[in-house]
Image (cartoon, rainbow, N blue to C red; front, side, top):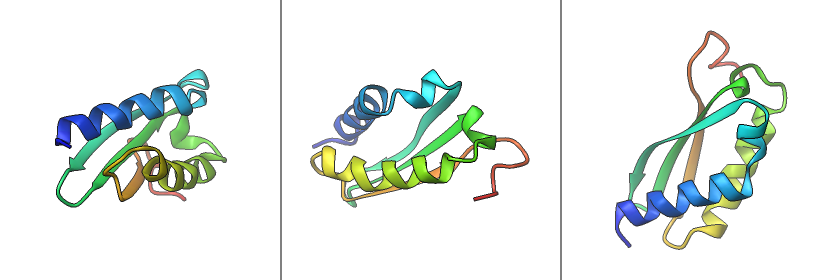
Amino acid sequence: MSAEGLERQTRSYLSNEVPQIQQHGGSFEIRDVDEEAGTATVAIGGACSGCGIAPMTMKAIERRLPESVDGLEDVEVVRSGGPRAAVM
């Protein structure tokens, strides 16, 4: 599968299976997809940046996304923006 295909499937999964990110004022950005390595990096931001349950959401995405997208072996989820972005 192409990197574009992996990105499309990743975006679809996040939009359909994790709608609470956007429903709660958060956002996600697919920062990188490496087809050969089967990896993706996803950043969550907006309201997620300061949310106390963001670490649980991040771990759930890291665990479930590779199970749901063929060709995706590993996912890293990071926080984007804001001074609390590094706090996990």
